[in-house]
Amino acid sequence: MREFIELIKSRSDEHDMAFSRIHDLPGSMMSILRQELDSLIRVLYLLSIPDLIERNRLMACTINGERWTVQTPKRKMAIVTDAMMVEVAENFAGWARSVYKFGCAFIHLSNFHGYNALNPLDSISAEEKSDILSHMRNYHGGPTSDSPTFHELASYFPKVFEKIKGNLECYLDMLSENAPPEHVL
Image 1: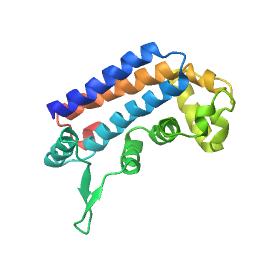
Image 2: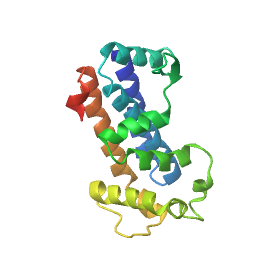
Image 3: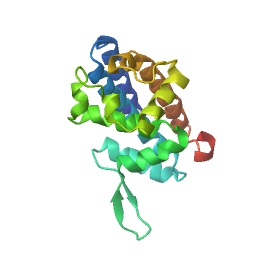
Image 4: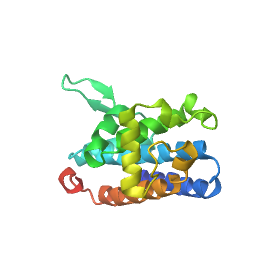
């Protein structure tokens, strides 16, 4: 567990350093947000597992470079997917799915990378856009416009990063204390 937590903290610290250097590169900032969120959903997934032996097994998989797998009801092993982890994270943080999905477009080559010519917010559903803007307003104070430019939205990315990083640190503390799922929700 200690190695896993140190690995997550090291990744997060590097993201923090990168964020301080790339204030004018919003696509790269979004990629880093998505990576930080990846760490967060993994920790939340672990915290959802009441069996401490299973938690430790999954953390060891990360340390050993192995994919996470879980046993299905039919006693077969299935790969733990990002979708599965995001689903669990939704129970902890209702914004995880929309931010994760939006962030994925910056990890994988997509039309979102043309954000200087076309606003990525215009490429998502009205519901997803509303979810993102609602979250941004509730937790980060804006943007106030219902049709912000990507650069307007990006001006809030440092606040978003700090929020995700702070939540991650809190959940890592819970993980290190072997908190049961009911203490996390």
